[in-house]
Image (cartoon, each protein chain N blue to C red):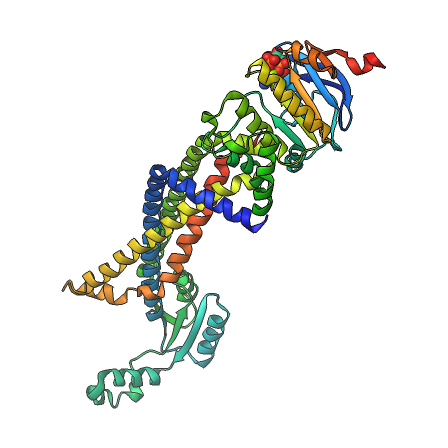
Length: 301
Length: 224
Ligand SMILES: Nc1ncnc2c1ncn2[C@@H]1O[C@H](COP(=O)(O)OP(=O)(O)OP(=O)(O)O)[C@@H](O)[C@H]1O
Ligand SMILES: [Mg+2]
């Protein structure tokens, strides 16, 4: 297609959006709302994920050993941990190391533990980091009844809750987003259908004088994409305002846990590219798809 | 140029619009297709434009076999055909000039070529003074000529005119047929569909008479 024709068709598409501005505005409104909801859920999700990650990183699993466990049993358990899946790192803390650690922890009161070296009450242990909270239970179950293991201490309840929350969130979020995507596509498609109806005579004449389908389709695709892009920009503006002002509101609220939340919020400067990019992508794809589906019927002449 | 081989067209309802129609129109010919209402004239045109498909038989137009043509190629077939519709089919929101230019623009012709070609064609049909006028301000005969200009602007090999005399008075009818004959003299094949026997009698050109979907008479074969 030559450049001048392409320019002409793109102009036609933008003019159509304007001529049909009542419907265009309605679908831009709905699409913008959808994007804000989807984007808002997305931002919430990444923040929750971020909090999960930091919890996961702090949490380690401690396998305490029985005092009677000998070198062979300790080495054997080490081999077992080595071959387990989902373990990102582990290290051994001997009874002496444990005492040393405890002394350090007690700071200037550490001298109180002097003299315990020969009758050390602290158990030796393996400290293990798991790659993800959802595998915590598996690792605990594998090691709990192992030879020489006294007890395994791990935040399994927390892990169960967090993974559960994350899963529910993911499923609910996907359903909502799915519904919103479908309804946005329907709205765009209906808007384009109005333009198509208003222009059906022109389309028929275009067909008779030998215009190709792609030529006829382009202005309508441009109209859909225009609606998508305008919605993306609006949604981006609104969402960035909401996000920033929530942050300021939380940190200035004087309520300690809210201040805590605001300090752990991911700053918008780290997110805006992804948000804008996915809004634009979402808008362009939906716009093109919505107009493409509604025009098909008119091309059958 | 146009070949119908034993063409039958039955519409979904069961109407047999064309029944074993067989004729050939050569390059540069001028042909009337005459028939009463419902004889199948418009069906003939729709088949040529590949708006409808044959039930049986073969149609060939300007080297396109319409039975085998792929969907993507249909626009290119249509560019070989300039069609003047009975109801003109002009776009009311565009001037005479824009109506003609539109047909070129949507077939990917350069802006420069459009500026050169449209005034020339409007002059050919005698509308150079009316180029900036909207269809509703034009008389029936003038609208007819805009439609003709639009059909001609691609320099098609074939002009198909469906009832070009249907909506205008007898004097204008003669004028439009004269114009079509002029175009024919410049080398374009012209097919005029009509139910008006007085027009046909006046011009003594080859005539294919349709009755109830069958070719009743073809004056070319009669002369041979
Ligand atoms: N789309 C269609 N579906 C079913 N039947 C049709 C269709 N189009 C035409 N017909 C029938 O086919 C027959 C031929 O119709 P056609 O339009 O070709 O006639 P015509 O010669 O152009 O008539 P007129 O001079 O009135 O325009 C008629 O009986 C008509 O009712
Ligand atoms: Mg007819």
